[in-house]
Length: 244
Image (cartoon, rainbow, N blue to C red):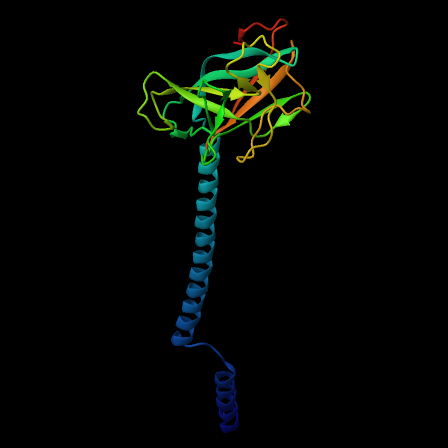
Protein backbone atom coordinates (compact mmCIF):
# COMPACT_ATOMS: atom_id res chain seq x y z
CA UNK A 1 0.00 0.00 0.00
CA UNK A 2 1.29 3.34 -0.93
CA UNK A 3 2.02 6.01 1.58
CA UNK A 4 -0.70 8.29 0.13
CA UNK A 5 -3.40 5.63 0.46
CA UNK A 6 -2.41 4.94 4.04
CA UNK A 7 -2.68 8.61 4.94
CA UNK A 8 -6.11 8.87 3.28
CA UNK A 9 -7.44 5.88 5.24
CA UNK A 10 -6.21 7.33 8.52
CA UNK A 11 -7.92 10.64 7.68
CA UNK A 12 -11.25 8.88 6.97
CA UNK A 13 -11.10 6.95 10.25
CA UNK A 14 -10.39 10.14 12.20
CA UNK A 15 -13.26 11.96 10.46
CA UNK A 16 -15.74 9.19 11.31
CA UNK A 17 -14.62 9.15 14.92
CA UNK A 18 -15.14 12.89 15.18
CA UNK A 19 -18.62 12.68 13.53
CA UNK A 20 -20.00 10.07 15.96
CA UNK A 21 -22.12 11.45 18.85
CA UNK A 22 -23.70 9.87 22.01
CA UNK A 23 -24.60 10.37 25.67
CA UNK A 24 -22.78 9.40 28.77
CA UNK A 25 -24.10 7.26 31.61
CA UNK A 26 -24.61 10.35 33.80
CA UNK A 27 -26.85 12.01 31.23
CA UNK A 28 -28.88 8.83 30.92
CA UNK A 29 -29.33 8.69 34.69
CA UNK A 30 -30.47 12.34 34.82
CA UNK A 31 -33.06 11.77 32.08
CA UNK A 32 -34.32 8.59 33.76
CA UNK A 33 -34.63 10.36 37.12
CA UNK A 34 -36.54 13.22 35.48
CA UNK A 35 -39.02 10.75 33.94
CA UNK A 36 -39.48 9.01 37.29
CA UNK A 37 -40.07 12.30 39.13
CA UNK A 38 -42.62 13.53 36.58
CA UNK A 39 -44.41 10.19 36.63
CA UNK A 40 -44.45 10.18 40.44
CA UNK A 41 -45.91 13.69 40.60
CA UNK A 42 -48.55 12.79 38.03
CA UNK A 43 -49.43 9.57 39.88
CA UNK A 44 -49.62 11.41 43.21
CA UNK A 45 -51.93 14.01 41.66
CA UNK A 46 -54.20 11.35 40.18
CA UNK A 47 -54.32 9.37 43.42
CA UNK A 48 -54.98 12.47 45.52
CA UNK A 49 -57.81 13.54 43.23
CA UNK A 50 -59.28 10.05 43.29
CA UNK A 51 -59.10 9.79 47.07
CA UNK A 52 -60.67 13.23 47.50
CA UNK A 53 -63.46 12.38 45.06
CA UNK A 54 -64.05 9.06 46.83
CA UNK A 55 -64.25 10.77 50.23
CA UNK A 56 -66.71 13.35 48.92
CA UNK A 57 -68.80 10.61 47.33
CA UNK A 58 -68.80 8.65 50.59
CA UNK A 59 -69.88 11.73 52.55
CA UNK A 60 -72.68 12.37 50.05
CA UNK A 61 -73.90 8.78 50.29
CA UNK A 62 -73.84 8.79 54.08
CA UNK A 63 -75.64 12.14 54.20
CA UNK A 64 -78.30 10.80 51.83
CA UNK A 65 -78.76 7.66 53.91
CA UNK A 66 -79.01 9.70 57.11
CA UNK A 67 -81.63 11.95 55.54
CA UNK A 68 -83.59 9.07 54.05
CA UNK A 69 -83.53 6.95 57.18
CA UNK A 70 -86.78 7.48 59.05
CA UNK A 71 -86.44 8.23 62.76
CA UNK A 72 -90.17 8.21 63.54
CA UNK A 73 -93.01 5.95 62.51
CA UNK A 74 -96.74 5.99 63.27
CA UNK A 75 -98.27 3.55 65.73
CA UNK A 76 -101.98 2.88 65.38
CA UNK A 77 -104.71 5.02 63.89
CA UNK A 78 -105.14 8.72 63.24
CA UNK A 79 -107.94 10.08 65.44
CA UNK A 80 -109.93 13.19 64.48
CA UNK A 81 -112.18 15.19 66.79
CA UNK A 82 -115.28 17.11 65.73
CA UNK A 83 -116.43 20.49 67.00
CA UNK A 84 -118.77 23.26 65.95
CA UNK A 85 -117.38 26.47 64.49
CA UNK A 86 -120.01 29.14 63.98
CA UNK A 87 -122.70 26.60 63.16
CA UNK A 88 -120.49 24.45 60.91
CA UNK A 89 -119.34 20.99 61.94
CA UNK A 90 -115.64 20.49 61.31
CA UNK A 91 -112.51 18.76 62.58
CA UNK A 92 -110.71 20.93 65.09
CA UNK A 93 -107.84 18.63 66.15
CA UNK A 94 -106.15 15.42 64.99
CA UNK A 95 -104.02 13.02 67.04
CA UNK A 96 -101.69 10.13 66.29
CA UNK A 97 -99.07 8.12 68.15
CA UNK A 98 -95.46 7.91 66.99
CA UNK A 99 -92.48 5.88 68.12
CA UNK A 100 -88.79 5.85 67.37
CA UNK A 101 -87.87 3.48 64.56
CA UNK A 102 -85.44 0.65 65.20
CA UNK A 103 -81.91 2.06 65.61
CA UNK A 104 -83.25 5.52 64.85
CA UNK A 105 -81.66 8.59 66.39
CA UNK A 106 -83.60 10.32 69.20
CA UNK A 107 -86.12 12.86 67.93
CA UNK A 108 -86.62 16.16 69.73
CA UNK A 109 -90.36 16.52 70.42
CA UNK A 110 -90.21 19.70 72.46
CA UNK A 111 -93.76 21.02 71.92
CA UNK A 112 -94.55 24.64 71.03
CA UNK A 113 -97.86 24.36 72.94
CA UNK A 114 -99.30 22.62 75.98
CA UNK A 115 -102.82 21.48 76.80
CA UNK A 116 -104.06 22.74 80.16
CA UNK A 117 -107.68 21.66 80.03
CA UNK A 118 -108.91 25.05 81.23
CA UNK A 119 -109.86 28.23 79.42
CA UNK A 120 -108.66 27.98 75.84
CA UNK A 121 -106.46 25.15 74.60
CA UNK A 122 -103.74 24.82 73.53
CA UNK A 123 -101.52 27.20 75.49
CA UNK A 124 -98.48 28.63 73.75
CA UNK A 125 -94.97 28.07 75.11
CA UNK A 126 -93.50 31.34 73.87
CA UNK A 127 -89.89 30.44 74.73
CA UNK A 128 -90.01 26.90 73.33
CA UNK A 129 -87.21 26.09 70.90
CA UNK A 130 -89.02 23.31 69.11
CA UNK A 131 -87.16 21.38 66.43
CA UNK A 132 -90.00 19.32 64.94
CA UNK A 133 -92.40 21.18 62.65
CA UNK A 134 -95.78 19.91 61.43
CA UNK A 135 -97.47 21.28 58.33
CA UNK A 136 -101.02 20.90 57.03
CA UNK A 137 -102.22 20.90 53.42
CA UNK A 138 -105.60 20.46 51.75
CA UNK A 139 -107.13 21.51 48.43
CA UNK A 140 -107.68 25.05 49.65
CA UNK A 141 -104.71 25.98 51.84
CA UNK A 142 -101.27 25.17 53.15
CA UNK A 143 -100.25 25.82 56.75
CA UNK A 144 -96.48 25.41 57.05
CA UNK A 145 -96.28 25.44 60.86
CA UNK A 146 -99.37 24.37 62.79
CA UNK A 147 -99.70 24.33 66.61
CA UNK A 148 -99.23 20.93 68.23
CA UNK A 149 -98.93 19.38 71.68
CA UNK A 150 -97.50 16.10 72.89
CA UNK A 151 -98.32 13.61 75.63
CA UNK A 152 -96.26 10.54 76.42
CA UNK A 153 -97.80 7.09 76.32
CA UNK A 154 -96.31 4.23 78.34
CA UNK A 155 -92.59 4.32 79.12
CA UNK A 156 -90.97 7.73 79.26
CA UNK A 157 -87.79 9.00 80.89
CA UNK A 158 -89.23 12.47 81.45
CA UNK A 159 -87.45 14.43 78.71
CA UNK A 160 -88.74 15.58 75.32
CA UNK A 161 -86.62 13.18 73.29
CA UNK A 162 -88.44 10.36 71.55
CA UNK A 163 -86.09 7.43 72.04
CA UNK A 164 -86.21 3.72 71.32
CA UNK A 165 -89.00 2.04 73.31
CA UNK A 166 -90.96 5.27 73.88
CA UNK A 167 -94.27 6.40 72.36
CA UNK A 168 -95.69 9.89 72.11
CA UNK A 169 -99.17 11.08 71.16
CA UNK A 170 -98.99 14.16 68.97
CA UNK A 171 -102.07 16.38 68.69
CA UNK A 172 -102.39 19.02 65.99
CA UNK A 173 -104.79 21.89 66.75
CA UNK A 174 -106.42 23.28 63.63
CA UNK A 175 -108.76 25.43 65.74
CA UNK A 176 -108.55 26.72 69.30
CA UNK A 177 -110.80 24.95 71.78
CA UNK A 178 -112.98 26.68 74.36
CA UNK A 179 -112.69 23.96 77.00
CA UNK A 180 -115.64 25.20 79.07
CA UNK A 181 -118.03 24.83 76.15
CA UNK A 182 -119.52 21.67 74.65
CA UNK A 183 -118.14 20.71 71.27
CA UNK A 184 -121.67 20.97 69.86
CA UNK A 185 -121.85 24.66 70.75
CA UNK A 186 -121.30 27.07 67.87
CA UNK A 187 -118.70 28.92 69.96
CA UNK A 188 -116.80 25.81 71.07
CA UNK A 189 -113.84 26.59 68.79
CA UNK A 190 -112.16 29.70 67.47
CA UNK A 191 -109.85 30.66 64.63
CA UNK A 192 -106.13 31.25 65.01
CA UNK A 193 -104.01 34.31 64.48
CA UNK A 194 -100.25 34.22 63.96
CA UNK A 195 -98.47 34.03 67.32
CA UNK A 196 -95.00 34.89 68.55
CA UNK A 197 -93.75 31.48 67.40
CA UNK A 198 -94.91 32.28 63.90
CA UNK A 199 -97.28 29.30 63.79
CA UNK A 200 -101.04 29.16 63.49
CA UNK A 201 -103.87 26.84 62.54
CA UNK A 202 -106.99 27.71 60.55
CA UNK A 203 -107.38 31.44 60.02
CA UNK A 204 -110.73 33.18 59.71
CA UNK A 205 -109.99 33.49 56.00
CA UNK A 206 -109.29 29.75 55.72
CA UNK A 207 -111.50 26.84 54.74
CA UNK A 208 -112.71 24.39 57.40
CA UNK A 209 -112.47 20.64 56.94
CA UNK A 210 -115.84 19.33 55.79
CA UNK A 211 -117.19 15.80 55.26
CA UNK A 212 -115.20 13.85 52.64
CA UNK A 213 -112.45 16.46 52.77
CA UNK A 214 -108.91 15.24 52.05
CA UNK A 215 -105.96 16.61 53.96
CA UNK A 216 -102.30 15.83 54.58
CA UNK A 217 -100.03 16.26 57.58
CA UNK A 218 -96.24 16.29 57.32
CA UNK A 219 -94.24 15.79 60.50
CA UNK A 220 -90.73 17.11 59.91
CA UNK A 221 -88.13 16.24 62.57
CA UNK A 222 -84.81 18.01 62.85
CA UNK A 223 -83.13 15.13 61.00
CA UNK A 224 -84.34 12.03 59.23
CA UNK A 225 -87.17 11.43 56.82
CA UNK A 226 -90.46 13.32 56.88
CA UNK A 227 -93.50 11.41 58.17
CA UNK A 228 -96.40 12.02 55.78
CA UNK A 229 -100.00 11.07 56.55
CA UNK A 230 -102.85 11.67 54.11
CA UNK A 231 -106.39 11.13 55.33
CA UNK A 232 -109.97 11.72 54.24
CA UNK A 233 -112.74 12.87 56.54
CA UNK A 234 -115.74 10.49 56.66
CA UNK A 235 -119.02 11.34 54.95
CA UNK A 236 -120.53 12.05 58.37
CA UNK A 237 -118.55 13.71 61.12
CA UNK A 238 -118.79 12.06 64.53
CA UNK A 239 -117.48 13.38 67.82
CA UNK A 240 -114.47 11.04 67.61
CA UNK A 241 -113.42 9.52 64.30
CA UNK A 242 -110.89 6.77 63.57
CA UNK A 243 -109.30 7.67 60.24
CA UNK A 244 -107.25 4.40 60.21
